[in-house]
Amino acid sequence: MKKIKKITHSDLCRLTAKYFLESIALIEYKCLLVKENPDVLIFDNYSNTTLYEIKTDVKDFRRDLLKPHRIVYKLDSKMRIETFKSSIGTNRYYVCPEGLIKKEDLPIGWGLIWYYDNGNFKIQKKSGAFKIDKGLENRLLINTIKRINHGKCSNILIRDYIEYE
Image (cartoon, rainbow, N blue to C red; front, side):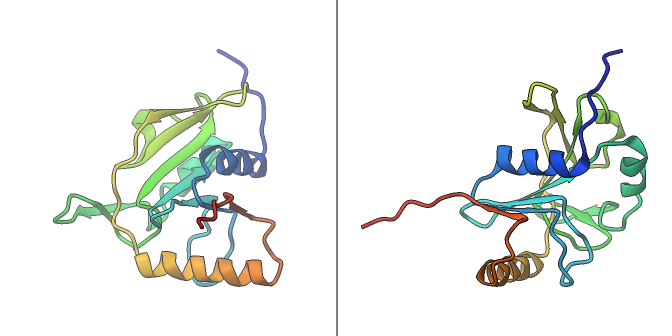
């Protein structure tokens, strides 16, 4: 079996955010408004969101599966996956070093991305579409703007924008 080079949780969070950045990325973002503290939450230009849960050990992954916002409740009328507790991220992925998590171990609807020692990421399984709490996501964005305004933005990445004349 191939030896996996150890990477820290925080390092893999930052690498994931930089690699998948579309418009705004929140990294290990702690906020009192949300019961869930996302490892990486990416907003695109249309405010669609992708949640990346970073795992660097299997025990942490197994504990994560027991959280109420991970447990599938039903499919809604639009075939979106609904969990027992409303959550964030229309698309949801586990990101881990190559081989740490297998596709067959994933909860329903979750995607899987492997990180390789050479710095590349590869999707092993695409995410389904989850029903989200859009109001909660909007409150996160508003909170992010307030943090930036106060200079507290070490865990926020923003893609440069183009000014139109």
